[in-house]
Image 1 (tube, rainbow, N blue to C red):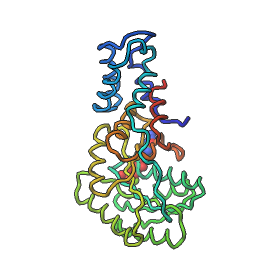
Image 2 (image 1 turned 180 degrees about the horizontal axis):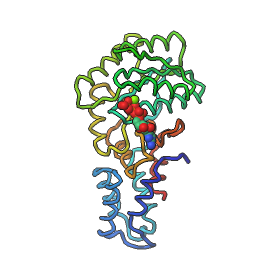
Image 3 (image 1 turned 90 degrees about the horizontal axis):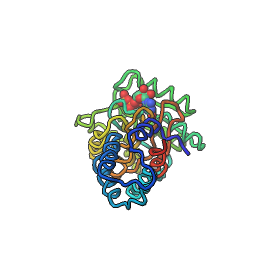
Image 4 (image 1 turned 90 degrees about the vertical axis):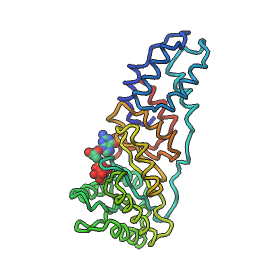
Length: 293
Ligand SMILES: Nc1nc2c(ncn2[C@@H]2O[C@H](COP(=O)(O)OP(=O)(O)OP(=O)(O)O)[C@@H](O)[C@H]2O)c(=O)[nH]1
Ligand SMILES: [Mg+2]
């Protein structure tokens, strides 16, 4: 079983959920406690209400193990997978976007390692010309992951660097190109337009690229993630999501809320700061871990 980074959330839920013995009825007080617990781990209002509705229909005879019931009912509510395959391309070009500090650069380091382990030849490109330390930070990750690195510490134009990166990936026969971008607020129209420009410029070199645009969300951000996702979707057509920092939060329920609401597949989740702290997302395993403590 993968480490879903849910220890904090699971422990939190375990402490909050009412203890039910065999044949105890799911009465309104119990249900209310369940509701509060689920809301406070950020499962979201919609999913929580749907779940409560299902719990209300459960026969009292069945209510012997609340957690097992919750697991089964939650799993029945959650759509199993939403096409979690990564699109094919040679080179496969993935553009990473997101609000400041969500974990884009760290995730790229982890993914470079993930692809390298599959014997793919990986190139990482740094287009964050905004934050001074960004270039070096990504370079260190590339080295650690055994991936090639391209950037321009004096560069001013992110799109121009992206352009060079795609050309270089084609020329040198890379399997995967991971393009980092500077963090930006989803409310800043000019910065969102810059992302669209990066995308257009990439397409000039390779019309099918970027094959994927992955939005990195911080698992601690809660319901505001939904708003961020909607804006990035509008601006650059996000094809996949990564939820990071689940190890640091007791609000891991947000992942299921996002999965259910946004209809964009969650590809991976980040569960720590190490290069191996990345897990391929799969809802059933996630639910199991959420209610495992
Ligand atoms: N605990 C934990 N920390 C993480 C995870 N992912 C990223 N971080 C930390 O979050 C901080 C920000 O990560 P970055 O990768 O620099 O985020 P970014 O989105 O590239 O930031 P900007 O480029 O400034 O927008 C760093 O301190 C990372 O170590 C994670 O899964 N778990
Ligand atoms: Mg960064």
